[in-house]
Amino acid sequence: MDFSRRKLLAAPALAAQAPTDRPPNILFLISDDHTAADLGCYGNTHVHTPNLDRLAAQGVRFANCFTASPQCSPNRSAIFTGCAPHTTSTSRLHTPMPPWESTFLEALKARGYFTGAFRKVHQGNDFNKRFDFFQTREAKFETFFDKAPKDRPFFLHVGFTDPHRPYRKGAFDPPHDPAKVRLPNYLPDTPQIREDLAHYHDFIARMDSECGALLKLLEDRGLERNTVVFFTADNGMPFPGAKGTCYDPGLHVPLLAKWPGVSKPGVVRTELIGHVDLPSTWLDIAGMPQTAKMQGRSFAPLLKGSAYQEREAVFSERNWHDNFDPIRSVRTKWFKLIFNASPHFAYRPAWDLADSPTWASYQAAARRPGFRSEHLRLLQPARPVVEMYDLAKDPDEFHNVATDALYSTEKQALLKRLSEWMHDTYDYLPPAEARPGEPAGRGWPLSL
Image 1 (cartoon, one colour):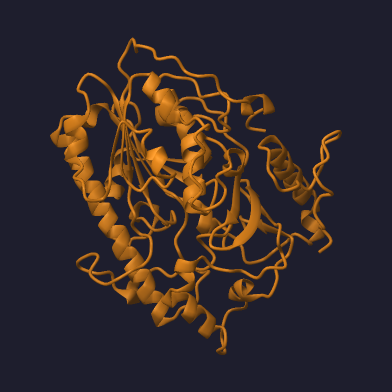
Image 2: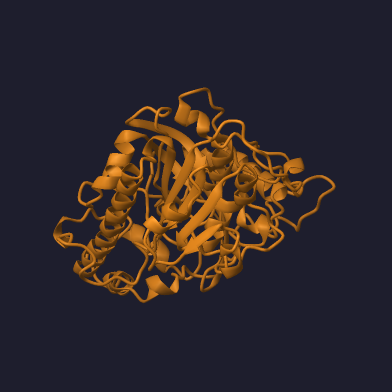
């Protein structure tokens, strides 16, 4: 396992300390509803993202970064605490961060950091007060740098609301051509879906241009050389089979990082990274240990090109998001196992997706001849309790091999790994396997 139960005890209060050497600034950029595949540097040459592509060329691109949840605020809570959302009672969409939960912000402040945030943080209004500086969308980025003390390092969080729905024309000029969009295999090919994807790409491009303006501001202020820059997304794209699901399009997000003078340019890392690893990494960069409760691990060694003990798996969860659909998943490099705790429910998209032209077109296409059978998985009246996918053979997660005897050994290993994680992180759902002396329900009806 990646952590012990001892580490889940509450972290002691951190005493303020004067840094002996000034650590680097940290700039954290996060987009909203954005799958990894939809950046130029990840292979989508149709979407216009020159600024983020340049960031990847100047630093490190992580090919296998996964969120703690395919939902906005639960996953963002994991980024702040380094814990699974259910550990901190933040697994329900829009749940505020409990005041008793500590985050990496308190630790950075103890190190002398000036902390700031723009726009979307999504942990409740009271949480925004934990930053030394907080401004909404209307504020200009320059205001933070005007107020940040020159004798202290800073941590700045910039939460973009793009490419979240609703979409409209005119977000980017020139607009993306629907005929040229790269259509994912998990979506049927219809004019309405192509147009919706083109708008999604427009919103990504608009966000990319804002990233470029902010990175240019770092240069103009003479801050680029001593600022570590990170870019990621909170969860996957708002399309069927992505956002709100534990399939890869809902969990696999971009992660770029540049540490001037430390990370080499143009590096691609294939190690598994979880969003719970981000706060551990930031504290490591600041010269501090992670707190006792954090469940992640620092991947700063990968930025330095030094030895790193790769994690064997990443874990994710989905709970309430416009509807209650508790799901847990474990993913290794080669396999994915998904536990549907309420299999009697059909797939139900989040409200923004349910009101989209894509979902209407998806349902209409299913009534016409030629609709691919693989796409029917989202239209079934119920789902299996356990899904398992051989990602090397089936990267689109179309063919459930959970009942295939050829995969029985790997399936049991994944069930055990997921159960251990659920025990260790105090999940409210019962794991598949109970620990001796620690009953947690009767397990799952795996025969279903």
